Image 1 (cartoon, helix red, strand yellow):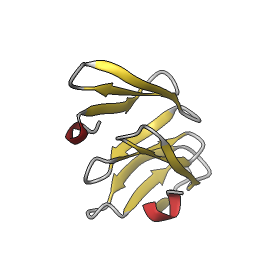
Image 2 (tube, helix red, strand yellow):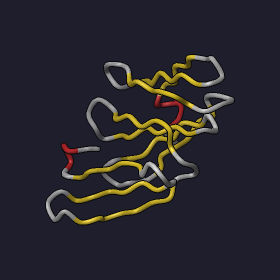
Image 3 (tube, one colour):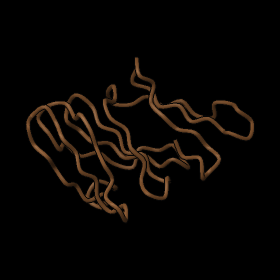
Length: 111
């Protein structure tokens, strides 16, 4: 979620959709399909970027303000379990069922 910008953005647990809700009007302003069902979601430090990952091992980056997919990166060979944004927000660490811990710079993902 990105409360700082007056929107709430998140994934639906049982589907591959992202929903963006305007907190002022309490209405859905955007519903976007994801490339896959997300297993982990985190926000950047300033809450302007949402990072999600799925069972394929791919990490996706969205703009919380616009709701647009900014980029994606195949980080693992199996599903991502957990992610953490490093302080400063320039990179994300992910762990996966493939037994690897990866550090990915967000600048390398965002197109």
